[in-house]
Length: 137
Image (tube, rainbow, N blue to C red; front, side):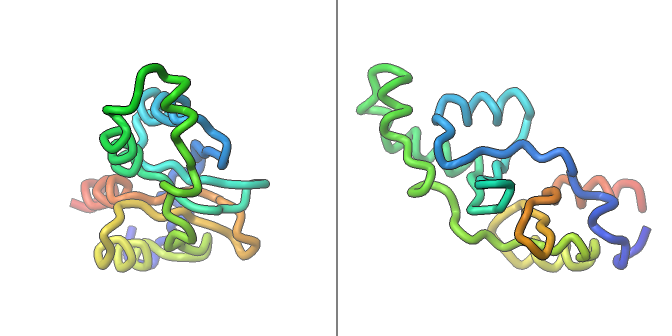
């Protein structure tokens, strides 16, 4: 494996996604049940944004004093206000080198992989790149 290896060979292809109407409690269940840290937000399989576990926890911390029940938390949660709109993405034609360059020069730790139509094809994270490094070493 080298820097020109297509990311399609190393990215996570079965991506857990949310939409703009996914409730906060359902989002937290997805993060916990699947052990993920980034949740692409889609409409008709087209990427709208991305929500990180950190984004969700910041929302929870901000609203914690106002919460009496899960339903109230779900009412307060607005995906469009919390997600990162137009996140940096990688093309499904990108290479491992492209992924390393993007993720190493950014504050975020994952990037959705999309095709030319903007449809989500996968996601690549720092964790995926560490797995590659482990194989090489």
